[in-house]
Amino acid sequence: MRLLLADDHPLFRLALAQAVRAVAPDAAIAEAGTFAEARARLGAEPDTDLVLLDLHMPGSRGLMGLATLRGEYPAVAIAMISAHDDAATIRRALAYGAAGFISKRAGFDELCEALRAVLSAQAWLPPSLRGTVAATPADVEDRALAARLACLSPQQMRVLGLVAEGLLNKQIADRLDVQERTVKAHLTAIFERLGVRNRTQAGVLLRSLELADPANAIDA
Image (tube, rainbow, N blue to C red; front, side, top):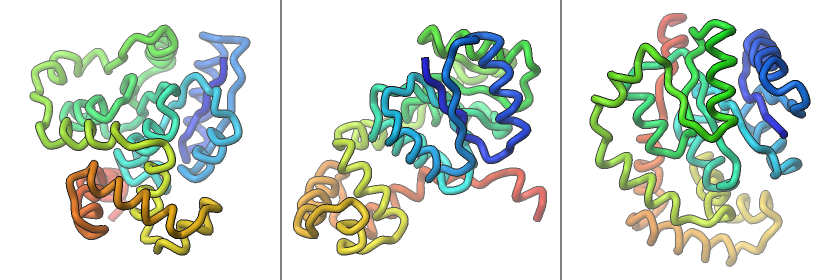
């Protein structure tokens, strides 16, 4: 069993690793401190079973990180981890394919219980919020966008992610080691499946996945 711990806080990654070893002593554990590192790890080890992904880690742009990894590696389960654990955020994460949502406020025993659940292919939600999440209606726009993103191929998701970073067609072609006309063909298909006409409209859709980090708001 392979797990990837993707969080920019080393101490929390340590706590996660300890919980993983308590639940699955023989599991292979990889770590990443940025979203770019997480993608690189998955590229090198696509047979990873589970990713524990920090909602606000550098480069993830909120739920865009989740949507990107789900699109590029649909066979890999992804559970979100965050202190931003309100019912609406959890409901949105589930809409974009999260296998569960683990609160950073959880104690060690709860972390272990959460890991047992997601490793057994069971959805996990913070116990104190399950009733509230169940009573929170799913956002129609989120469900629609999630369905559109699910129609994209892994390579199209990579192209879309680079568009979100502001790269031009030539830069995307160089990054993916393909011809520029291939990028243009991907973009035509992407825009059609997302129901948009151009990069600007695609950018508006993608920005809806961004979430402000409450920690930064407090620091400010």
